[in-house]
Amino acid sequence: MPKFYYQALPVQVYFGAGEAKRTQDILKQAGYHKILLIATPGQQKAAEQLARQLGDLTVTVYAHAVMHVPAEVARQAVQAAQELQVDCCLAFGGGSAIGLAKAIALDTHLPIVAIPTTYAGSEMTPVYGITENQLKTTGKAAQVLPKIVIYDPALSLNLPAEISACSGMNAMAHAVEALYAENKNPVISLMALEAIRCLATALPELVQHPKDIQLREQVSYGAWLAGICLGSVGMAIHHKICHSLGGTFNLPHAQIHAIMLAYSVHYNRHADVQAMDQLAAALGVDSREELGRFIYQLNQRLQIPLALKDLGLPEHAPADIAQMICDSPYYNPREYDDDELKQLLLQAYAGLPPATL
Image (cartoon, rainbow, N blue to C red):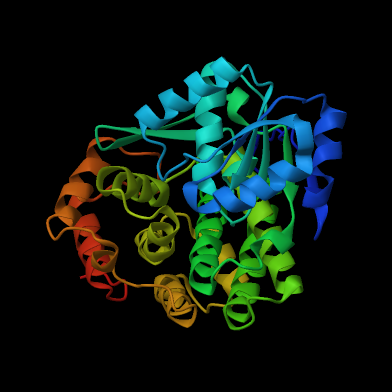
């Protein structure tokens, strides 16, 4: 067995239907009494309902989170947190709310408590991202890792099937890339494979039965494991592509991840043989060569939009993004090939199955 390094994430996790009802007690036990409740404008009503449950613990509901954490939005949020003299950021929602809480913590070191309502996974990571001048910059910092995460699958019962599917595939992408990360280790690989199996099994059922609480629990469980993976090891080509697409063209985060996973896996299918064989076994695929097409077909079953152009990506973007990725790459087990990446991005743009030309 090769040498490896593993460090467990210091996060308290509460998991189960109805756990969000305990938020007030959990916050008090942790010693937090002046809460900035962060949400997106779309989640404002739900956040205000939670604020009423928290009583005088909530200083205000700050419903200004948006995708990809624009730098100006982050600066305004930091200023609000400082002026209100809060002692904790409570992020309620998906990656946008959690991302804004992280931007605040990055600057102020305020602790974060997260109540995820999607399957983004960022609540389990010390990874942050901020977008400025159409460039998304990511990094890791200990102070942005939430202290407490409360998973309540009941909160996602009203999440539309398509968004649930995209968000779940976003989580799967975190687990897939953990298998071939530069600093992969056997502990995280076990979690990644469990997450992949769980999500691949539950998501097709969930889109047919979105009100099934047991399926919601399964997908939340898979997303939690995938989040640990993302927070514990490094990212690779898939995340580089998605961060470049999202930051540059302001495309919806989960949908990009869902679409691009098939193409990223196809690109890397022979790069880390052990990892790809593990992935094929977890998905029930006969060979590494078929992995990209299998994930593409899974997206079809989940009724996920297949073409980046349908998300608003301009026609010139594939060539631009391929060049951008090669100019400032993340680690990847295979070297970056500008021509092949351009071809795969063109296929993703058109919604065609991944194939090496």
